[in-house]
Image 1 (spheres, rainbow, N blue to C red):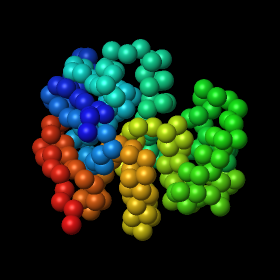
Image 2: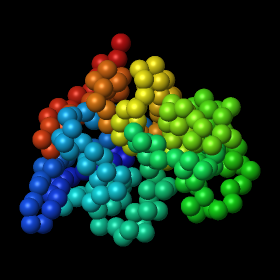
Image 3: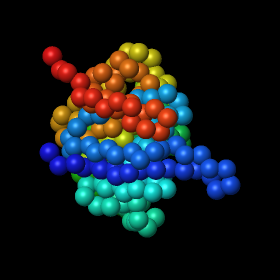
Length: 231
């Protein structure tokens, strides 16, 4: 399959007077439809790497390609459009708007360009909410939902624009073990049903071993890159 993300010779340095380099000549690519994990200790550079892939941050040097387009030189407006149409984000902290209902939160990425969602889009949101198991609380305010329900809402929100890529940074970091298993089952189902490419940062080695490929970042460099064996 073709690569949907490619990173070439990525370096990232923070600071001007006191410089701190967090990524060193990283070369990585991800095939369309693949299900990947990135592991590494805190401060290893994995979140910086994910932010660069998601165009939330730019490398100090190197090239970033998303779906064949080079992004590291794009304007802010072009990057915002690319993110909204191509990439879905799921974070450890779900960033739901507490004064909005669950379904309103799910619709927000679509409403950035289309303030009045059509009946079809609302039905799509409901379909995703049903898929992740929160249809019965779709009209609840985000503040009146459990942590697991809020994270499922964030996953449905990430899906609303049918992105080719979902980037997840510790998506189950605040959840108990059973909720963690449930969330990863949902992510795998989405991967298989929609051929969505997943790149997931996790501290949980057991979860990483459920993915098809494990990349370990250590001190800003790729320390390990293996494909897991499925029985």
